[in-house]
Length: 296
Image (cartoon, rainbow, N blue to C red; front, side, top):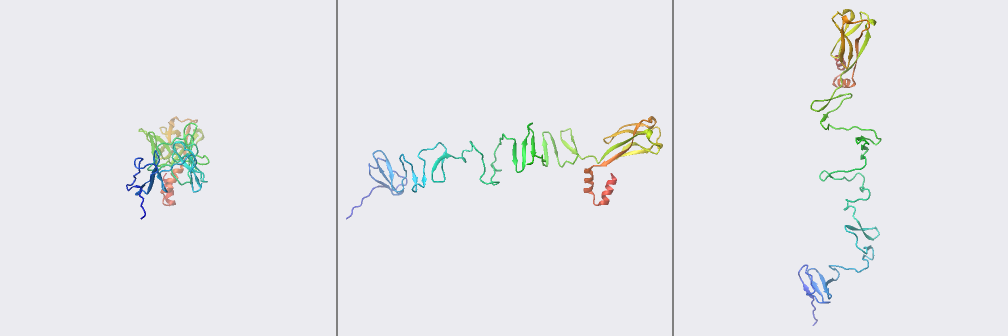
């Protein structure tokens, strides 16, 4: 009758024999893990097709007939194994992990594809030593004086568009018309007012060059000069001698006029472009446009 030889064995998962369990050259089997062990005079070691640990001597280690070759010495701390594309593995610094120290340009693998940070995971501060930030074809630059300049690719200054802009205690909002005038209120607010409907220029003449039928300016009302014929003036009427920026600067009574006195005879007025735009936008037809102009 054939003899049955049974090895020392265990049915406990993860059970590894010790030198007290296995004598030198004796075999022990873990049935649950399917692992075979033996021992020498100082330690227990695993043997068989699926070893728990593997020790290689001073030579190199290769897989699949040398298709992949491992390095013969250890690398530095935090390095990783990388391939040269021909089966040779070497230790190198992991650029994706070690972003605290980069010695070259950081470029994405595809153009206009990836973001830096997100709305949920944003970077805190950005420090730059250069003087330009490129946003597509627009550049945000710093000048030698420390000012910020926004320009296009040809270095032409471009506008800054915003619903409201606040600068320290000064603030304003809305569109700003051409030639609008800025004023600062008592509370520090900056307001823009529409330009006047008219620009009025005084037409002047010396009294000795006028006749009794000529007119002179005596007042200013509703954006127009009030004029009177010289022959209808009485001694106590006032005649305007200077007019500027929509206001009468000086005037004298008719009884004090001399032949050499320069007086204002009329005003040359013009409508601003902004006012014409405003009237044109409001008018329903050409006749309405004409009546609105006449009303000025």
